[in-house]
Length: 461
Image 1 (cartoon, helix red, strand yellow):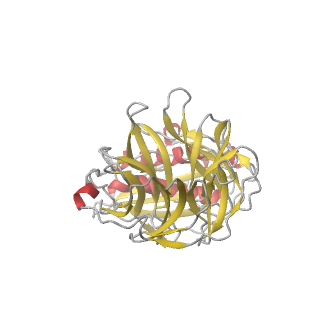
Image 2 (cartoon, rainbow, N blue to C red):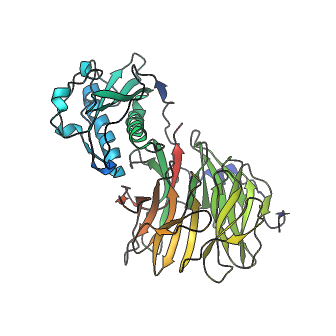
Image 3 (tube, rainbow, N blue to C red):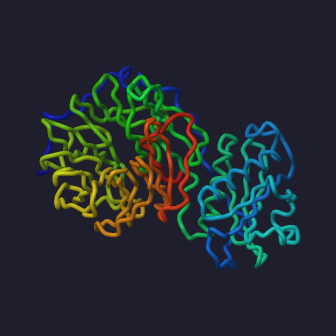
């Protein structure tokens, strides 16, 4: 079954102008975030023993040693301290696990209180946890942001950490503080300091303009990557977060491009006159999976991320599409209608040992393996379209949403939250939503235009 195809699909180097005609301005990238050790950063025990969704967290404004001008906020570091606390509050509230109270309803601590909280000030406010922080302007125009988490009952520090960021990256410091709190209190890996790629949609239903866009995990710092001259589809981040792979119809023919986020350049990986779908990275970033229809049969192929010959991995009659690697790179989960309807199948990375996973009624499509390896998310179709999960052995089916048309799930980097897009009945409008693995805490993400095909990237380096 496994063989090389040179005649069917060969790498063709397109002229540079053709490759870049749909690109907008390069995305402005900030500097690397430097982590610094805060005094007393060792973790302590937590006194809270209830449910996390009852856990109150007080997050007052971050203090500053002196209020000075900063490119991050026209009103200075004191105003920036309020904004930092607001972002952290929003992150933790939107996660659905905590009950944070933000800076607008709390007194402002002094800079001296950051290392020595005034316990009497906070003891009657009903919060089990207290977040203190500071922001300082440096001589090199960068900012130092510190984050401290305290247990109110024990009156002790649980964890502390700091970061040096460029003014353009001040929100990253806030997300990192939220990640620190989330990880310390839940024991789970963080996910707030990450980005989401998606397809931005505008125009009438029968003539949609689809552009590639990215934003922070909370919807901030939104940027369009392509101009919309060509249709863009199904983006996915590379494992190292430096690139995006996506499908584009530059001249009416499908092409798979890899876009370098740091340089704003893109590389043509494959092109064909045949319908091509759903490019996906291998965990090591060396290969890209995609599907292509040839002679009425759609199969899954693998190609080097640098381009070259493609290797066909499936050859069963019907439509095989949407391959997604397991985190260890040993297996691929995909969608196939070889049994007569859309179902989920699994195979080894070389295409061997193909077998069906989904046997729970209805149809199943668009599978994506969790970064933790313990779950597979997919679209379950039984009248309505809804997001569901199952174990890699095909058991443990659970439906997580109950919308009319919810589809194309993508995982948060910690494997505990799923993002998808929802189409409104009768309007065709699309939007991004997320839900946790309990099926609760469903929320819509803000986007400036309609949105589909989300891809959640890994934690930023």
